[in-house]
Length: 64
Image (cartoon, rainbow, N blue to C red; front, top):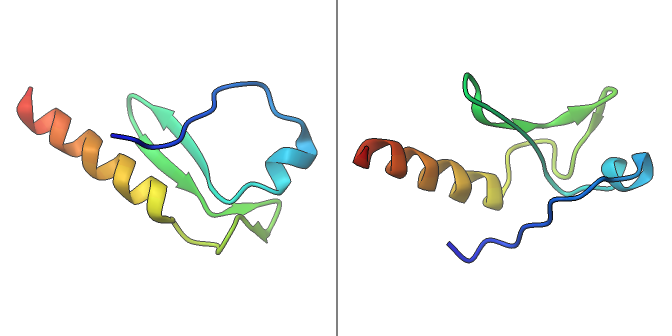
């Protein structure tokens, strides 16, 4: 899908500076985090990479 990814441990400072934060699980699938401690993450709404990942995941589920 050519989405940039980086899976690693983050410092709190890096997390607070993130443009996007997602939570993934079997029940929530791919869930965007729009606020962290009452402050907006990035623009405060799901962004382009989340939308693309969500669409790709839904398409994958539909094929199986």
